[in-house]
Image 1 (cartoon, rainbow over the protein chains, first blue to last red):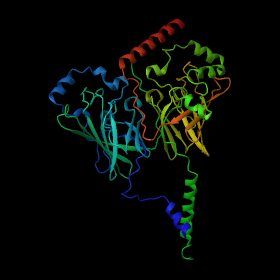
Image 2 (tube, rainbow over the protein chains, first blue to last red):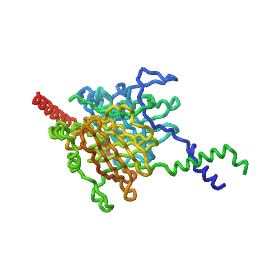
Image 3 (cartoon, chains in turn yellow, green):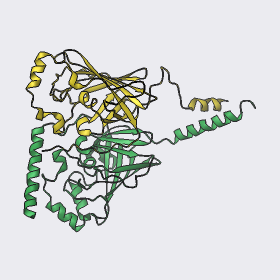
Length: 217
Length: 253
């Protein structure tokens, strides 16, 4: 009898204490804005629609659009990258983090979302910022701060400050075939008010390929 | 007791046992952040990097076919060095030279995300499928792997011919074939990667060497690295490279 009990205990646990979190592993691609999913689900909002404070708007008008990070093979930051149509991501889940790998590595890079720590007290500023994640039910909530000021918020050249704070809420919809992705940006020095957009990412059964930024010199 | 041993329970016990056995045979999980191990740390374990640093060129060059050697000698250190202009170095070069990566292990595949992500990219090793019949040529090729006990055996084909075998700019063709065996050594302190490269169109014979990687402590994080950090320097490199390529073309004409 003891053998039976120990074997039963060794069976994979289906229900975990505190509710099971969804398995987000896989390859996904953002759907086009014109597409409507069952239930009327659609992409909403766009980085072009952010509302800038007057000083930031003035600065934006003086920006040299040729310096757009997108055009010179630099990372464009999560705010722009996640909004773009056909952005292909791969989510990898290991014990302490979720890794988001972009097929377009030059512009998207690799984001590490740490699940078992908070933001460090002293943050080194980086292109992609410092991301920590937590589960709220079946929603992965990602909090990112610590950006440098080299990326733009949109293709019109809207700058952001190092106070940029992004919150992303990611959860599976339509039986896991899609992710609903909601991005919120807060930057009290640049944005007149917080701005949110929503994207849907379709799950793909495909391998991710090399995609090299072929910039014109 | 007869009731307890009903067919349903026997079946579920069977599955239970299978799951226990599967767990006993589960492949080791190497998830973590790794860096190239320095020889001074390997020495106490009686290990060393074969042909470390630039010495790897000396190991490769004797294997080159005459055309490949001539091509290598005709290359220009700036014009042809992909990594200099933030194009990929390919997996022949990067892991043996700089060698920083995060090893991510999932059921069915292993992902190696390299530290200099713009020039080394991401490598996916699929454990649940063969190579496609006609892989699309790519910088990092198509990798499949299988565990033999504690050793991971990885086979990679489907390379493009744009990268070099190493920093001396030894060429390879789309026929390049990378064979690797990875295992933990010295009580798990290091991952030993035994690398063999063959290319029937560029090499007279295959060459092999070992590289050792050290797992960083749990919680160590691989820092962000952006190749085109300074676009002006990068464009200058790129334009210089193009100028040299153009002048060489003029000479050839």
